[in-house]
Length: 64
Image (cartoon, rainbow, N blue to C red):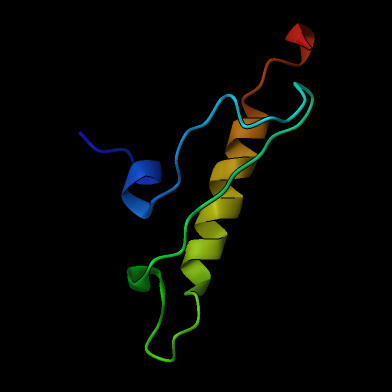
């Protein structure tokens, strides 16, 4: 089963080079992420923010 992150092209990269106290998210923009005017669809940006903030919220603050 494909995860939503993988479906939208947002790789899970635990070794992204950020400190343990930070969270990072990235996505490679491809043609299917764009609307008819050629701009990135707003839903892609919201999905990126949602997935990044969920990852940060689900961290165990006592393990830092």
